[in-house]
Amino acid sequence: MTSVNDPDVLAEVTAAVDAYETALMTNDVEALDGFFRDAPETVRYGVAENLYGFEAIAAFRIGRSGGSPQRSRLRTEITTFGRDFAVANVEFQREGAKRTGRQSQAWIRTETGWKIVSAHVSLLQDGVDQRLAP
Image (cartoon, rainbow, N blue to C red; front, side, top):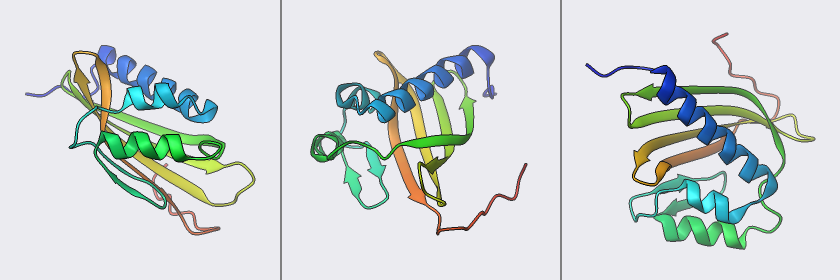
């Protein structure tokens, strides 16, 4: 049976998610690239782009002027499944905007640490709050 939210694994993934957020907010492109699994199967759906494969993700980061818009995390939910797989969901608000956004990531443990293999970022319509759970 697969364990869910083993405390040690949860702490590892939480640290990785926090480090990713720091890299995102400081536009540390090298660190951001390091969080994604370097493979053609890695996918990132952004607000305005669909990126298939690590090379496309890395090219997007290099070409992104000024980096990610600054944001505050409103809620972070991380769930681990066994010792080698986790999902992270972040609800965020961009600075100066009323709209909230969502980010989902699938993480796997590799020989070189935790890596994102799938990511999705989207924004809700202005003024819409779809939160139904506490």
